[in-house]
Length: 277
Image (cartoon, rainbow, N blue to C red):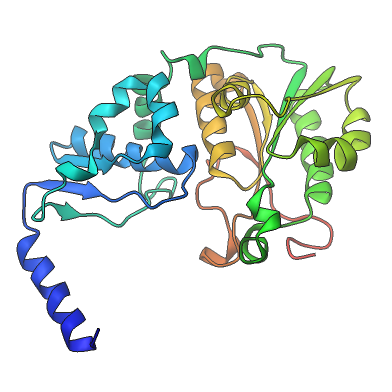
């Protein structure tokens, strides 16, 4: 397709898409954390009086079953109209694209009454560690963007978590690769807690999220799943919630810094050897 034809098509879309509804297309392959940022955007815009919808995709269905209220923020792809406006934003910049007040109001309206927010862990001497691996480490392109020395980070994060929140009796590990975590991180974790539990591979993503989000003490990694667990924990537990996160998110954007982080969290700014070490 020639540049002239593409330009003409783009101009035509601008002319046509002047309707009173805004639609956010949902790329394939997203996970729950990214869905939540899109739904948060829809909630904010609708609270402002705008008709804003997120296109529903099959991957959303298991989450919509436990969050039925969010269906009202979505739309079937077949119902999208040619003249609907499109919004390409990701809405992940804490304090820029959404405020703490908007975030907390969204969580209270849509998540707190759901099975995802029924506390699994309320013991202040327990800690949940959420380790994201998966395609961050198996896909060469994503590895170049998102990988870092998890062991070095966890050493810093555990020291910070204990300094802020006190000693630990038990650590719960939630990960998409618990075998790797048990082999590579088990000895380190046992230095801090007498008991280390690993979520079984048969656990559901919904159960994993509940364990992270309802814990008053969390160590996360550079994953939107971790970030949302921290957001929800803050609402459930208030000042008793302690969330530790890495400053690093991805090398290909914003100087690698995680712009999703709540600045009130305990943020590990650097690790021995650096994020690229």
